[in-house]
Amino acid sequence: MTTKKAQLGRTVSIVGTGSYAPDRILTNAELEKMVDTSDEWIVTRTGIRERHIAAAEQATSDLAAEAARRALADAGVKAEDVGLIVVATITPDMGFPSTGCLVQTLIGAENAFCFDLEAACSGFIFALETAKNYVASGTVETALVIGAEKMSAFVDWKDRNTCVLFGDAAGAAVLQARNAPHGLMASAFGSDGSLGELLMLPAGGSRRPASEQTVKDRLHYLKMAGREVFKHAVNNMVKSSKEAIRRAGLTAHDIDWIIPHQANLRIIDAIADRLSEPREKLVINLDRYGNTSAATITVALDELARSGKLKKGHRILLTAFGGGFTWGASVVEWDK
Ligand code: UT7
Image (cartoon, rainbow, N blue to C red; front, top):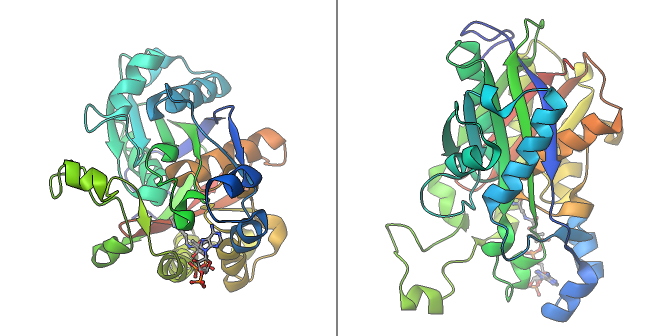
């Protein structure tokens, strides 16, 4: 946990962002032909209209590497100057090596140390805080934080409850200590492992290794009790948002932009209502991407930055909820 200024030392800023989504777009109309659903149901229950789907030969590290290249270009930082790569993902290329190590090779960041962080849809904000502390302490000068997912590889395309919700994308942020007054200001996080079964990928790990039976039982696909997850998502994102704002020494009035995890427009609306925040502060792109898990916030942040609407000194609230359960919120002052 951190307070207004990074307690470990230097203040840390986001100095560049980048994002990438595969070319292929899957519309709701196409999904109508695949499962028993309708564009009307998907739009009214979720707000999603289309999502990007990676090509068969593209893995999560490929999406991540492209987002990383774009973020480094935006920051004016060379790959060899990156000291740390953290990839937040629940859809790694493989069990190991980590997607972070694979990205290192793809982008030529030979001086970085690299690892993955798994906190499902909360992964990017957990990774941002983790990398921030490495930079704040002086362990590294430049960190690359990536949220990247190929959800399409783990979605059961026969399950209408879940297959309409997810998409593939990656986003990245470059962190450096810039002696800015605030930078990454404060965060509040939480987890509740006792509710893990409500959102999980049951097989393929050490508990239930892959077998003919697990494949037959479709246990290598994501399972979600949507209505239950919905309720916990709203409560915990609101609670952690309030706490992060308080720890930053701010009030909700001081926040210029809210970037919530993009899972469901009704969840996002409920958060805005419960925080008494106007819709104009919300950054929403799930109509075009669906739920890209750890990538949602970082892709939305990159789009906001590139839109020209984000100004130096603006305060951004990032908040997420995901499998685990995991949740949290971070307040960032934009220093670019
Ligand atoms: O990213 C991590 C966090 N994830 C989330 O935050 C997701 C949270 N949950 C949600 O966004 C929503 O719960 C869903 C979008 C997943 C579902 O919306 P819901 O309003 O909670 O619907 P429901 O699951 O209660 O289902 C309502 C009905 C059911 O039919 P019956 O039992 O009432 O006859 C479902 O079978 O809608 C049916 N249904 C569908 N109908 C058409 C479920 N999926 C579909 C579908 N098309 N794709």
